[in-house]
Length: 121
Image 1 (cartoon, helix red, strand yellow):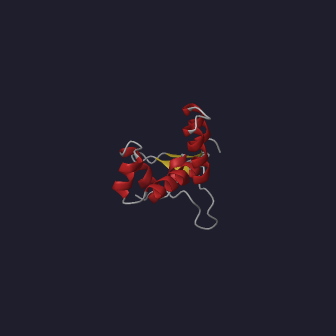
Image 2 (spheres, rainbow, N blue to C red):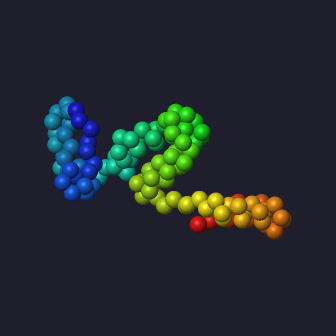
Image 3 (cartoon, helix red, strand yellow):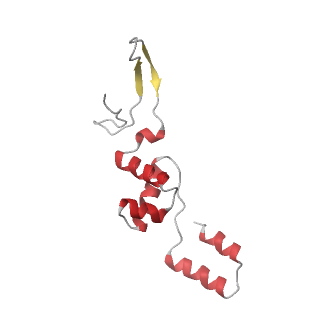
């Protein structure tokens, strides 16, 4: 058996399943059946997701397992999150992080405010 393809080889659009057939009695059901969002991920993306889950989301472990850097893990994670239809929150720039940490060190903001600002867009 072949793996179901999810992308049209002509226009790159999403494919849908229109026919199901029983292996035992050959009963055929035709309708519009959509694949789940994970079926639309590439083999490389699925491998990354599987590794990420196996490592329980520990990015350091994913780095070791896949032999890639922390920024690459984060980039792949953001890419997969986007492909699954979710928005990612970009990390603040290095300059913005320094501003936040400096304000925290000077007592101008609380640790809670610093965490909140670190997670803002």
